[in-house]
Length: 301
Image 1 (cartoon, rainbow, N blue to C red):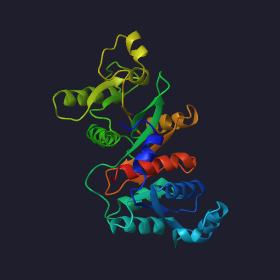
Image 2 (cartoon, rainbow, N blue to C red):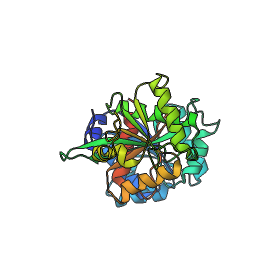
Image 3 (cartoon, rainbow, N blue to C red):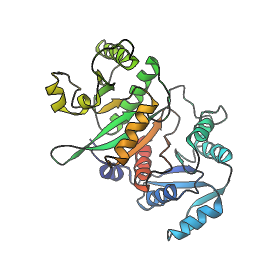
Image 4 (cartoon, one colour):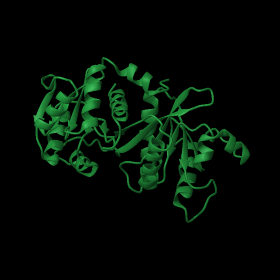
């Protein structure tokens, strides 16, 4: 089982994957692409303002001619070029540079891109969670990046996508916590009533490959002490591998809280398309983007 990003990066070295970086004239995205190349994680095709890209690379002390650079300043056209590389098999991963997520996803989801598979696309956020023995483990969270207000059926697909990423990380039969504000069932709180239905489907063997419990408040999902104090007995409580949030707002806020308040190491990947899609925030540091690249490469293996 892969327990941290250092182990993940070692795992994916030498895999000869190529990333299409869309609107690549963005400092941290370029730094991540350069570092991925240095560490033999992946090569990159850089699509964007070629002068700015070359100037950035030169400022970083690297040779711009060692990268394939395609000049396209228009973000929409840059997305179309990036998806064409993936469609033609010349790239296996898409990384967001200086382009907003809405423009990127609109292009990826277009019929012309040819990257749809019929599956729901969802963002799986991965973070290193420190345990008492000073070691860390990966915990996954979804979906804070794509599906605005998921239906019951979409939540099931989000779980399946997260389980797929967990399996790639070596987490077999992951424990899935369906998050809400409370462990009580409240008819007016959809996250609690959906959780009951999803848990029942898992119990009946209609959702497989994981153990699901919920609704669970965040403390119950990750803290065995909290579960004990509140008298909650569950295979999942206090030991969750995957946190499923009720909607995009809660997922986005939790993800940014883990990044900016807890300062955890993070990465994330969208799966469900024909290639992994990486949508780190434009304000994310280079390390988070490199972690996301490594995660994207892992999903292609």
